[in-house]
Amino acid sequence: MSVERLSKHLAGQGLCSRREADRYIEQGLVRVNGEVVREAYYRVQPGDEVVLDAAARAHQDQRLTVLVNKPLGLVSGQPEPGHTSAVMLIEPDNYAGEGKAPRIVDRHTLAPAGRLDVNSTGLLVFTQDGRVARRLIGNQAAAIEKEYLVRIRGGADDTQIDKLRHGLVLDNRALKRARVTRLNDDQLRIVLVEGRYRQIRRMCELVGVQITALKRVRIGNVRLGRLPPGKWRLLGDGEQF
Image (cartoon, rainbow, N blue to C red; front, top):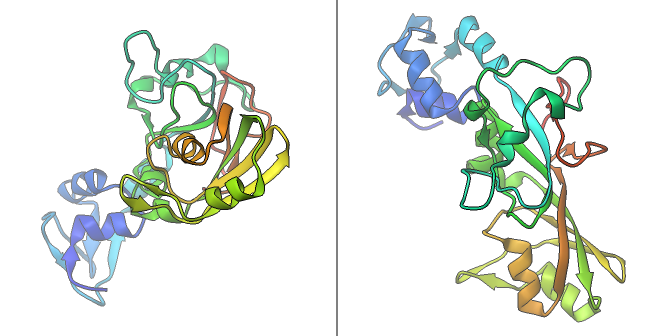
């Protein structure tokens, strides 16, 4: 470990987000080598023992992560003219998890951890937990697989599928290798380890494959499963991306 700022170190260990780390340090909830440190700019040295207080860990564990099956026509983030944000689905009547719907005081504290465009459906994650957000959209996101079912018109030949797997360039940058499987004449399964803007749609345009529907069914180890369109549930205690 190199010398680094304390808040960056806490975030890098997956204990919380940088913003949360700053707050915990200010509150005296972080110890370095047994001593409370209240200076966010404190530099952690190799071999230092950094501990997040139990109260801060408990606070993190209470933060919610919600899985939504986004239908067509909704946007992932802020509302746009003519379109509603998918966060508006997170209300008791749309709950499809186990037991009684949890009480969410302000659903706008749930931030989207990743995007789905207005014409795509499937698994969308909203979270209050900086650890989850960092895992899905931070530096660690490169290791997270995202699986999509892609309906196409006119099929895709072997040459087109090979190009989708490797060799394409978007925005002057080569794409990472993708896993592409032909399920039948009308459907592909595509697994990515990156999330460029409208990536699958743009990939298919480059090779002349016409998409009619796009659905995300998995992020990391978490699957959409049988969650109905327009419904939501909480990330389970045993689930990890």
